[in-house]
Amino acid sequence: MKILHYALGFPPYRTGGLTKYCIDLMLTQAEQGHEVALLWPGRITMVKKKPEIHKGRNWNGIGSFEIINPLPVPLDEGILDVDAYIKKGDETVYSKFLQDYSPDVIHIHTLMGLHKEFIHAANELGIRTVFTTHDYFGLCPKVTLFHNGKPCDNDHNCMDCVKCNQSALSLKKIVVLQSPVYRKLKNTHVVKLLRSRHRKNFF
Image (cartoon, rainbow, N blue to C red):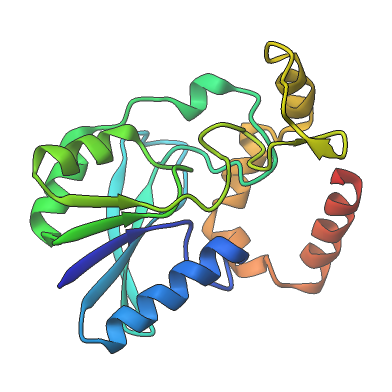
């Protein structure tokens, strides 16, 4: 079987439970003889805005396809500029990619960075699609449904959401975090220190 996964990317660039689950699943499927690949949201360019899909080097036998100019990936930082996260993608780009790669099934692990046109293209082509949710991103921009140290069981007509997302990263910062340069520098001592300080303040 030919299986295409969609998640945030490969380690060490991406880490956390979602990435670990997806990687473990893909490696197991590959060991069982399936052809497996990962489609993931990559860099956002300043010149071209149209999405493109670039084939990268395989990762431990797993195919790699990077979406250039995906939607921004907020992780658990929240969302300020809502319009930037619901921009329309070019469905023909996704249709052509899916026709060329021709997967038997698509397994989506997150909606972050993904244009809805990808899902529509898969549906139009009759490709079976599975969605595993690893967090509350479809409901909560900060993915946790947690507010002021407690489960968020009442958003008070979205007023709590506004407060929660006031500290969201700017689009400029997200562009940097999705850049190839950041991928290389992410695990350097200085960047680790900056990330640690940010997370301390974050919580």
